[in-house]
Length: 177
Image (cartoon, rainbow, N blue to C red; front, side):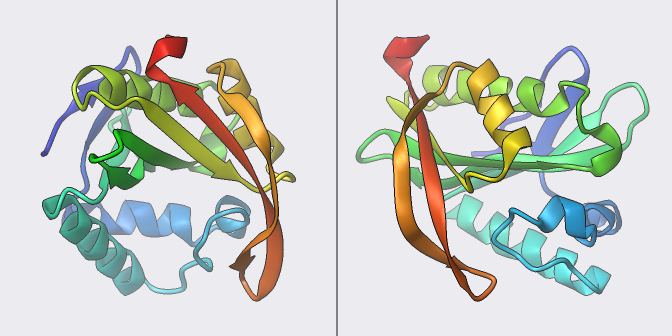
């Protein structure tokens, strides 16, 4: 499963090891990784290893992660995809990150929108969910723009960077489209 997705301004494709320098610049920014389930990277080898790991999940149809590239500049501006695919139950968890220079310009909404479209049309999923720390206002704004439903907050649901954190869960169903 190696789709390539396009939007008006973006190109999403399977991650490649050659993306490691660009993704390292994004994943080494503490503002970008603040709400991610990774610590900020300190060496490009960590980005290469993450790409290798995510691609191995993709090969087993457990996840699909894309590099997000801005068409006009050719710059890699983030990544996104399905962190966990459950084909038996026709659902997936979605995740995304965008380089700080591109925040507030609608890129995350555009990328996640095309991921939703692909999930419901090509993958035939019934449900796409997102787990977000309640303090992650930017990500919540993206989900609200795309008309995800806030289902509730799971108290101290995950241990993130050594601390138990509440997680808000949002979902969108194929029937919501």
